[in-house]
Image (cartoon, rainbow, N blue to C red; front, side, top):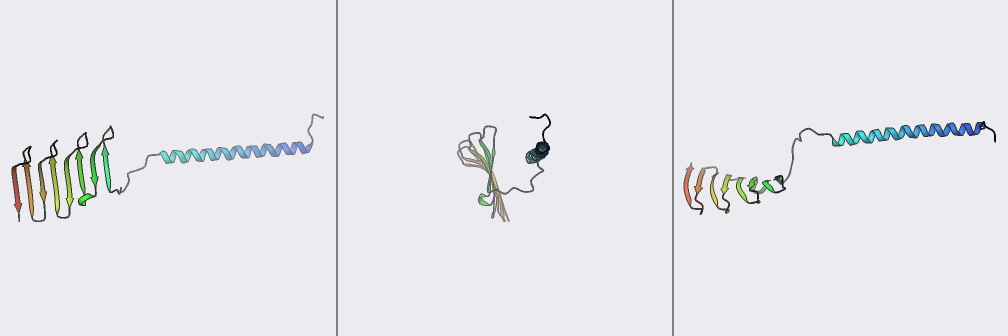
Length: 138
């Protein structure tokens, strides 16, 4: 064999080298596009204009629910203790709003409510007996 390749081998080698350069360029561009897409997907976004849900639960660091926001009864916010027991219940209903405070035994110990024509503020003892009440009606 001779040391100088024939022109057909040289032409073929040049075509292969051009093809390899094009493949490297295409691979580099695809990799760059992938990295850009990945970074764009992970980038923080601005505030969301609105969130729609029928129930939202706020969790503590251990994953226990400490607050529940729901569409129940026209709108409801319930605050829970560390064991998941409700202690405060805020309800917005068609006839009016209501806030109820419960003790660790689940008994109502205070609250307020209102309707179109009346308002009520009250407290009770640990057994649920009324201690103080203020009512206003029009």
